[in-house]
Length: 368
Image 1: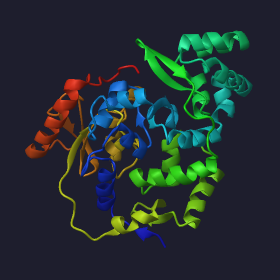
Image 2 (image 1 turned 180 degrees about the horizontal axis):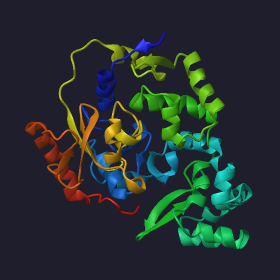
Image 3 (image 1 turned 90 degrees about the vertical axis):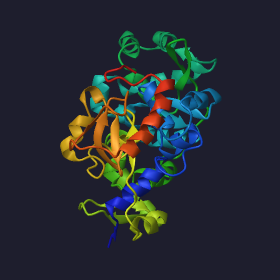
Image 4 (image 1 turned 30 degrees about the vertical axis):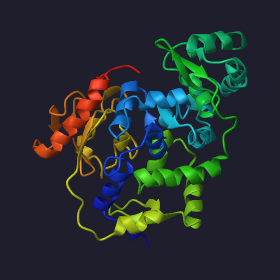
């Protein structure tokens, strides 16, 4: 029989684990490590997602410069800033899915043998230091078909993503306004089963309780093989690491066993809590925009917008209750048309005054 947990307790704990209540994060590595990455398709959004949790606005750039953070294509095929120490585990799970070997991917982007050829070449090309995309493509070109070379040099770099997932390249330091690619600071990726035994509990720590489906939607938009996903969760249940729980919505979910006492504690309701979060924040992306305990289904379209844009959100006691412009906390649109407590808004105004004076606001429709 599953342990029953209350949504209010779940959200209150999640707020704390996201560094949105209680002690702030000490640095960007703490944020990226605990949250399993910060989406960085838009650089300013990543800076703000870390800064709103306590560190300086420059913390992401500082971490990338000293090597404690790495920027690469990660979960859901999007650019993320990752804790360098945890990145290999995430990439091992992405590589294990071998999504580039699926027929639909090969028909649209590149044949599996072409990707294998790029993987053979990548290490040698990057051995002498970072290369711009144009330089990297020029290095590949003599060894691949003209059609593949053209695809490598156009679009959003989709053909390069399998190389990132296999841990063969990451973003290097920019050269002016031009991004670069470089060899990663690791030599191999861990065994996927061992990586899953670490990543799944880490995910449940900050986004759980959650179902295997929710985990895989976050990881790879449902791309993991079903038998593999079921085995990963079953092994963790057998080991006593995670436990089935009942959140009242009828869907089987799991929590870390060590968190159960906190999730079922019969304590007074947590105090009213308000935070304004930037575009593409992990509060929304971690559980997914279909997570009804965070975002009511009827309001999903106001947060998840055209072209993959995830709006800046207003979060009250763990639930998304509105959106804002990302420029002024007074410019909020609440779903129910109500008002926010002035004292809590004042705290957020002061927090965002600091952040916005040091970064450019993230404008909707901006390109990565």
